[in-house]
Picture 1 (cartoon, rainbow over the protein chains, first blue to last red):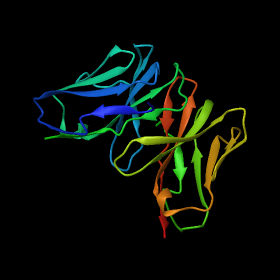
Picture 2 (cartoon, each protein chain N blue to C red):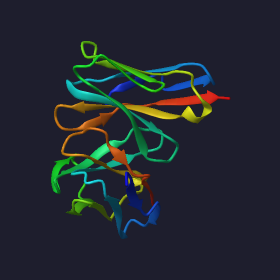
Picture 3 (cartoon, one colour):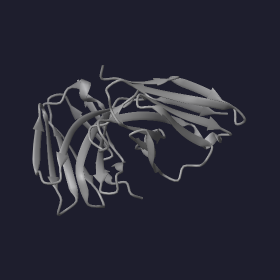
Length: 113
Length: 110
């Protein structure tokens, strides 16, 4: 299994909602990532988990809260988002703790109304 | 911005032609990678070149790296319509982050 699975594929939420994005991989990878991507722009790093510990937080607003319950799962909890947070949210994983050959999920297309 | 630059931003070629994309980055790196993204989808890893390597091949892909100029290029030979996608370079900087360039949108016309 060489897949990273993200759910849901699409999400529409209001600014007062609380929702979660989920990401799962069964490749035994020990590093997992959240990236945010606006249309026609490159992915921007948000968070990195290495061996289930948060190792990088790119000064992301607290309305985004990551969680790594175990080595296969990564969540992104969303609360009180703004319309400008609408974007494609991509999860990725890689073997070990190094930035080598990231495997990406298909992403969650998020719209904040 | 930590992100590198890519050029061209957009490239349109005919099937069978070669496509060359360039990438520049700003900091010392451990490796440089190239990814491909079809519209609205996740990214797919294409090739990785380490900082002590100068050239690497994989099928129809050829990547070069010039660390003195902090630049890399991706050559796709004998392009196909299915190669139509956005291509991103990504630099593994020595701060533990993989930083993506602005991307090149490649269109291959049948």
